[in-house]
Length: 336
Image (tube, rainbow, N blue to C red; front, top):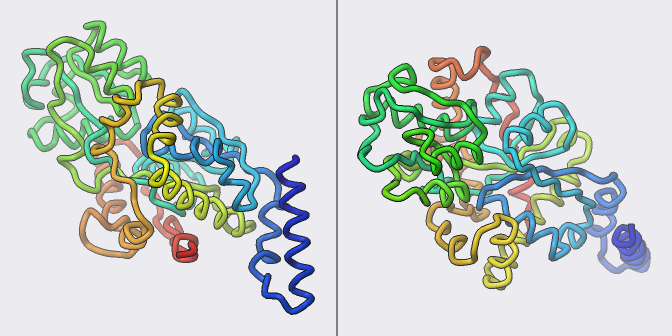
C-alpha cells in the first residue's frame, strides 16, 4: 500500500506541473495503472520466467506504476488452470498450452514473448537407450497436455513412431523427473530445472531437445482478454516492466543469477548452464515473432502448425481461433 501511495503522490505532482506548462502528460496518462487495482500474475519453474522474481525483488513493477501480486506455482499445470478459470489475471505459459486453453473456451491474449526454448526442454533416457527410436515399448513419463508432451510427440513423429508405440506414464513434471531418477521409468520429458534432477541418474542423457525444433516452444506472458481490453494501461506496464527487468539482469548479472537460482532451487553454476537452452527475446525479436510470416519463428505460422498437430493427436477436440490471440500493441509501445 505504501508503494501505491508514493506513486499517487508522484503522479499528482507531475500532473500539477503539467498545469504550469511543464510536459508531464505521459505521467498523467499512466495514473490509472496504479489505480486500476492489483493484478495477479502466475509463473512457474522455467528459466525464461524467473526474471519475474527479479522484477519483484527490485521493485520494477512499482517503478512502472502497477501493483502486482506475483504467484509462483509448483505445478505448471495448476498455473494453466488458474488462468483458464480466471483465478489469476495473467500467466507465464507456452504457446501450445495457451492454444489448448483457448480451444476449451478460455479468452486469452498473448502480449509478450518471453523466450524460445532452445534446449532446456528435453527427452532424457536411461543408459542403453540412445535414440528416440529406441523408446518403442519403453516406459516414458511426461505431464500430459504440456509442452514436453508436445515435444515428445514431435520427436516420436520424426522417428516415425506415435504415442501408441510407447508406454506413456502420465505424472506431474517434478514427479516424473524424480521417478526417472529413481529408475521407475525408462525415459522422461522434462523442462529445466527439472532436467537437472533427471540427469542425476548415472548414464542418463538427452536423446531429443527443443533445440532440434526451432521456434516450436515459444513462452509468453498471457493475459485475460478482458483485462487487455478494459485496462490496457496495466498490460502496458507489465510489458514495460519485463524489458526493464531484462536490462537490469544484463547490468547486474551476478545479482540476478543469485535471485533466479534461489527461486529455481538450484546452484548458481547450474542456473548458468541453462543460458544456452533459453533464448530471452529482445524487443525486436518480439516484433519479428508477432509479424505474420511463413517460418517457425513467426507466431502465426507456429500456431497453425501446433493446432494441426493438436487436432491430429487428440490434444484438443475443438480447433482454437487465432483471431485476436496475438497483440503486439504493447511491445510496440515500449520506450526505446
